[in-house]
Length: 251
Image (tube, rainbow, N blue to C red; front, side):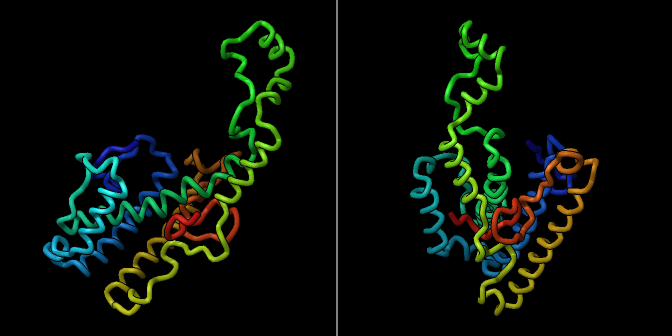
């Protein structure tokens, strides 16, 4: 959905310019990468420290060979030799478990809680699939009746609604990205300053999302009948809110 382009704001040119997930996500990705870069370069100022760190190298070997044993021999795995290698690995993991997961998870109830919008199963075939004369006749005469026979049962629909509600709910003690820092970070001036910059970038993202959601030129997030895109707003109240990016995946 994008091509590398050094002249573009985030280094990539989107195939679909009005793409809310990508546009908000790129700001969050850049913020995470900057924070990770500051962290890595502080604790690993020399590449030799990365290659000689047995615990770090052991962790990366476990990720590849045990955590993804079925893919361990794929050619695309990055090595872990330089600062850029480590920054890329950590940024990717942090993004997948925070922004990416938030975007695909916490909007599920808003989209699928009304089950006709996202039926989880059908109990009869679509009328156009190997139709019989009798089935087509019934469909033409009473399409609503056929639709109701096709939808999942009340029990099936209710079960999925409850599941989506649970998946989309933030707990009262949810920890959101950039909200709290580890004690060790606060006690290290360089890292503390880097975290504060990271926190500021997240606050900036909140404002950008609010501004974009009232920009009527962005047809995929503003205008009559269009739901605001807030899935990558970093913080949220508890409950089903359709926004908020937790620190990690917690199910």
